[in-house]
Image (cartoon, rainbow, N blue to C red; front, side):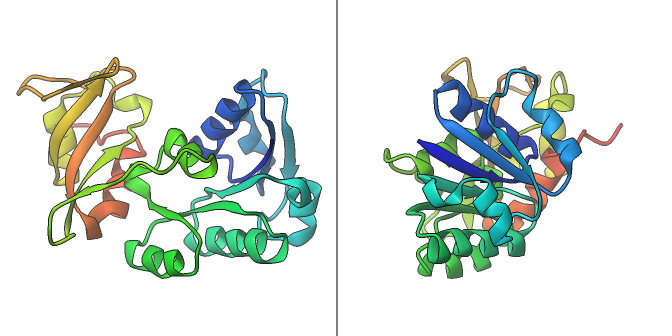
Amino acid sequence: MHFVIMGCGRVGSTLARTLGRNGHDVAVIDADPASFRRLGAEFEGQTVTGVGFDRDTMIAAGIRTAYAFAAVSSGDNSNILAARVARETFGVEHVVARIYDPQRAMVYQRLGIPTVATVRWTADQVIQRLLPQGAMPELTDPSGKIVIAEVPLVAEWIGRPLTEVEALTGTRVAYLTRLGEGMLAESDSVVQSGDLVHLAVRRDELARVERICDQPPVAT
């Protein structure tokens, strides 16, 4: 199957490498050619430099034969525009868009374009929405205001206390997934390589929290 990915940041590059390793044909679009270095030397897919929602750029990336399209750049407007072009102009059935603003995300869900709040957004979850195996549900309180969300942490967080994650984000660590096993955090727990950290956070704070976790922690 052919996949087109718009955005070669952390999530886009991981998604492209994962799909490539699984034997899929992948094309990655990004306006900055330097971003393709994230794909690594082993990536055998196609790279296309250009604006992701430009029709000619999408055609160059093989959108006409694409099984799925993922818009995972850092801009809400660019992502949703690209997703709509893929769906409405080129008829791609499997489309997802990365959206920072939860309220805006709900609007686009009504338009039939799956969106995911970005704190929860990992390459695995993108794949779950692009491939026909269903989406992982988000845990919320009855009011819908509080969520428990998986938060990707950049490598610079490794070795830092989880209490620091809580302090800098204003959230609470609900639990960890470490080596495939769930565990509760202790007062002296630190972030280890490969950890999946699940935070209890207000839904309207999702974008802010992800931005904090997506960069090295402030020195203390």
